[in-house]
Structures are given as C-alpha cells and as structure tokens.
Length: 250
Length: 351
Image (cartoon, rainbow over all chains, first blue to last red):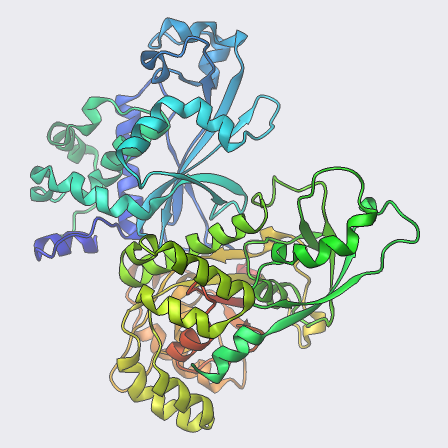
C-alpha cells in the first residue's frame, strides 16, 4: 500500500512490492486464477504463523500449487509442452478434456510431480518462485532432470533474459532444499513491464495486478501459461472490484 | 579497520572431529582430527585438512563431505562461527563434531560439490546483501574476474587487508573508521555519547542485511548449561529480513531496537522485560508508543523476553549502537548473523 502513495507522489517506482502488498496481490492472483483457469487446481494461500506465537497479526504467507504432473512425452513438440501440465486427479480420472490428446496417454509415461510456491523475498522485495520435483516414488529430481522437463520453456526465456536462472536454496519457511528462480533481476523487468502499460499506473492497480503480471513472465519458465483474460486488466478489474474486499488506500 | 573486525577475522573455533563409525574400515579407528576452523569460514572448506587424515580408512565410494553435531546435520552454508554460537549455547571447547564422507542427507541439506558450491553460495549472499544495501546488485554482478578471485581468496585465507581492498570496490561501505576507532578504545560510557552523533552520519544506507537465527524456549533457565539443546533444525526459525535503521532526534538506533524491528510479532505491542534489565525496559516503552500497526493493538498480548543475543561469539549489551554492531561484527558477505533466543511465555506459545 505504501507503493500506491509513492505512485501518486510520482516517485519513480523501483519495481518492488512491500510484504503487505504481496499478500494483497497474491489474493488477486489466486482469485483470478480460479476464475480463468477452472480446469487447473487453485493456488492456495498458506499462512505462516509467525513461528511460535498464536496471535500473529501479520498476514505472512505464501501461495502454493502442489502435485502438478509433468508428462514425459516422446514427441516433444513445442505445442505439446505448454499443455504438458496436469493436475494429478485429472490423470487418475483420465478426464482431461481441455488438454491435448497427447496427454491422454500419460499413464504409460514417466510422470514427474512438481510443487510450486510463490514466496515473498524481504531482501529483494519481490515475489520468488520456488519449486521442487519428485518421481512417483517420492525421489527428488535433480536440476538436470528438471531442466530436461522444462527445456523448451526455460531455454527460450533464458535466451531472452540473462537474469532468469535457477538456484538451489533453502525454502524460507520449510527449511528444506528447493529450487528457485533467482529474483535479483525481477524488479528491473517488472518496472519495464509496467512502464509499457500506462493504464496500470493510472488506475492504481499495480499492486493488485503485480503478481498476475509477474507470473505471466515467470510462469513461462516452468511452462505454466496464464490465460489471456487474466492479463486483461481493465475488463477483469471492473468485475473484480465487485468481489474485492480490500479497501483501496488513497 | 577496527580492532573488533580484526578479531572477528582472526576468530576460530577449535574442533575435534571424528569420522563417523559407519565409515571406519580399519582397526584401530583413526584418531580424531584437531584443528582450528575460522569463524567466518565454512565447514566443507576443511576438506583439504580432513581428507588426508581419514582417507586411508574410508570405504570405497565417492566423497561428499558433511558434518553433524550430536546427530544434527550441519548446514554448510551457515558460517562456522554462527553454527557454533547457535548450537553450542554453552560453548564446548574443542567442539566435538562428526565428519561423514558418504551418505549425504540431500533431503535436508543443499548439495555441496566442494569449494565451488561454497563460493557460489557466498557470492549469492553477497549479491543479496548488495541488493538490500543499494537496491541493486550491479557492483557484484560486474565484479571483474580477478577481483572475484581475490575476494574469495581473502575469505578463504582470512586476509582482512586484501578483503578490504577489493570489497571497497563494491561500494557497500558502511564503515566509518573514525567512529569505529573511537568506540573500540573508549569506555562504554563514551561509546554511547559518540554513538549519538556519529551514528547519524555514519551509515549511508537505511537497510541492513541481517540473518537472524531464532529459537524460543518456554522454560526459564539460569545457566546456559541448562538451556535446551537444538537437536532439530525445525526448532530454529531462520529470519532473513533487512533492518531499517530508524533514528529519532538525538538518539541512536540500538541493537535492542533492531531485534525488535526484525521480530515485530513478538515485540510490537506488549513487551515483557526480564527483571533488572532497565535498558530493555526503557526501550520497550518507546517501541510500544511508536508502534505503527493499529490493527494489532486489540490482539492478545504476548510475552517475549530476550534471553540471549550472540554475535560472533560475544553477547553485546543490548543498548549498543546497532551501526557499530553492523560495521564491526558483520560477516564478509555483508550479512550480520545474529543468534537470538527468546523466552516465550507458555500460555501463548503454539508449540
């Protein structure tokens, strides 16, 4: 919220987000995801009680999308890759209508499970995508195996931005090794993203829209595409204000 | 450079390291290795000393070095001195560790492929610190190859002069020699008075990179010997939040205030004070008044009390200027590592 004040003061925005704006933006993101991506599982907000005390008033937490399955297909064409994600239940029920036919043969293929978390980094003041992957037997995948899964998406984005790379670090809340897309360039390209869209600045919805825009870039690295409707800020904002429960700070 | 900094760089932990029994294939078993591990160093860097000592007894296989203390696998990316401060509340000298070359617990620890992993972990932290301080990490990203080599070499060899020469190019300097020299030689009393004036001009940035290792206790303990042992990493909250230095007129920002800013969930409203500690009491009231979160005032009050703050093996008085602590006690990657133990009243504790 302090950011909106900054915009009004016409202080050049540095592309970052405060922790409370993050939780606000996370809700917008998961609500929209649910509306425009009904065939996918939802992103859940996992509140992190501040360690040991009950009455924590801070809305600290992260978004979680777990147990997504990546289908290993032998004929990996570019078109199939973006459709290679399925919710586990869809695979079991064989009811993945919205997906490409190629995925229906999935049970014969090796299935890798992926967990995704969107966690706020207080150092970089931006969201960070953490993920891990495991085989059906629970064995964790190594980075080179993950890179094979993500090869199409990752290579493309990596060629476009030298800032997007994967590091192996400890999950800030779970204290276990996870992979993450390193956030040191995030604020720079977020700034560019929003400068290219003055309407966002005008209606003061940068904070709400932040995570959606961010994920439209970051999601591609792991092959999770956003529906175009989610990015259509004007249309979705109008309908969103009706169900929107957060007071706008002026 | 200050005396305190020199001491931090020269600081070392005496270690007595045994090879884990499952990896001993010879009789008699090899004697433990005794060595000094630099505080600012990292455990896997000791491999060049340990490998020759144990190599003849190891079973066949590929070496991946890791350590445990009383069964707790040690995180190699935490500086050795911090591990000691955190896990050995009552300092044990020598510190008895177990080394393993097989069976790496990769579900618990980040993989470590030798010195290179440690170096990149260090550089990543340095980048993060640079971002916190300057709002970007360009200076670290653009460091020349020779500078990078020199910087890492200075950490490996504990060469403070070489470190200062190359680190100054990163323009992360929060140093102020005049201030540091004054405080280190003067008595505590004049330390505070110089702090009043110098701290204001000294630190150019408002954001300080801090890694805080928090553990809480419910029971009272008088002696560190009676302090509960950390036998599981889940008992330690690893808090990586920058601290913003706040100053009010004519008053410096103290270590005590910094801790409370990092842990607002414990201290924002109510602040219980250990009896007889007037300095905390004073600050606590001010902190309560300057609380900026109106939503929290109606919530049940917590009772948390700072039992222990240990930084680089020392327990600084809590009203010391935070800028002095940062400038003198930070690690070479520009993070200040603090081990903090809080006593939380049982009624309010979750666990």
